[in-house]
Picture 1 (cartoon, rainbow, N blue to C red):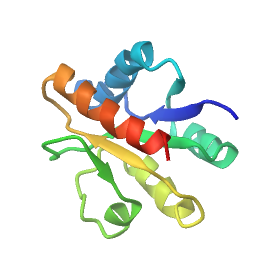
Picture 2 (cartoon, helix red, strand yellow; picture 1 turned 45 degrees about the horizontal axis):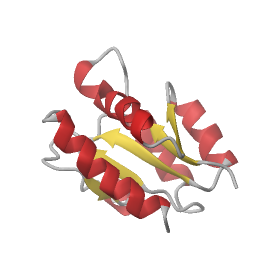
Picture 3 (tube, rainbow, N blue to C red; picture 1 turned 90 degrees about the horizontal axis):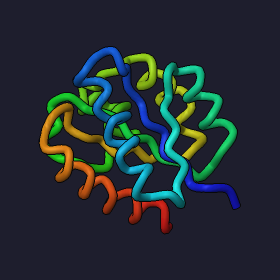
Picture 4 (cartoon, one colour; picture 1 turned 180 degrees about the vertical axis):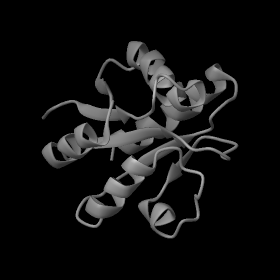
Length: 129
C-alpha cells in the first residue's frame, strides 16, 4: 500500500494563498508516514486525483475561522463562496462525483501552531479510516 497523500494547494507567490503549503511543509517533518505534495497547478491536481485513491486536500479557505473538513457538496452548493482558487474548485466539481474527495480547509491566517495541531488531528482521523 502506498503512503497516504496530502495534496497541498495554493499559490506560493500570494502570502495568504500559500498558507496551506507552509502548513503542509511543517506537518511533513512530523508526519513522515504521509506523503505531502505541493500542488502547483490544477492539471497536476487532476493527475494525482486520478492516479491515487488514498489522499486528501489541504487548502486555504478565505472567511474560515477554524480548521475543518470541507465537503465537496459545500463547493457544489456555493456555500463556500470565497474559495481562493477557482481553477481547483472547478476541477473538483467536475471529477468529484466519481471520487471521495476529502478537503481540510484552513483559515488564511492565524496562529500556525494552533492550525498545525488541529490539522494533524483531522489528518490522523481521515487517514486511519
